[in-house]
Image (cartoon, rainbow over all chains, first blue to last red; front, side):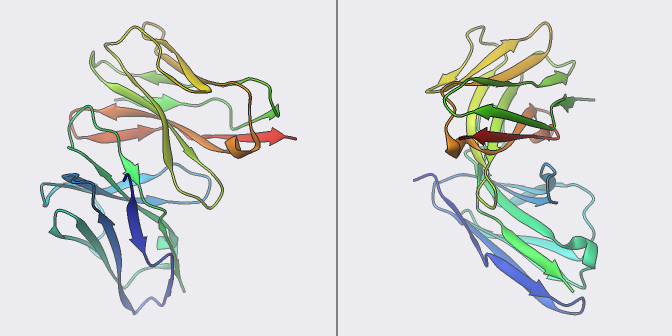
Length: 114
Length: 114
């Protein structure tokens, strides 16, 4: 089963709200990723978790806070977002974060910040 | 620094015909992976095909094949017998070993004409 699930599918939030995005995989993968994707653009890497530890933070603003409670679950906590943060947020996982393992993507959460 | 270039923002092909999407990349590394990902409208990003740089043989997955020219740093995707379901954004991606990061091309929108 090569499935990565994400909830919610859509989210509308105000700039003062706090919300969370959730990502889950049951493939035994040990690396998980958060990406931000604007329309008609490629994904931009935000965070990488390897063995439940944050290994890469691509200079993402602190209003985005990732969390990896266990090897199957990845959260992205959102607080005080800006309208320009509206985008599709993709979660992905791979067997390892090393060379030979392709990433499997979830369907994404479409976020609108009002 | 590694870069990935997709020079065709949009391509169209008649159903059942063959189309080739181009991708070039720049790197000084000798060992790496290349991927083609497909993202249908409002749907999930999925892996189409991957190529290991150390393999001379071109990868093939059913109707999808690549023409990997390592010296020329070229990695084109050929889709044979195009089907309506092939309509999507196609992203070429290079896997950067040093920080486990995918470097993405800008994408090519493929339109299938019935």
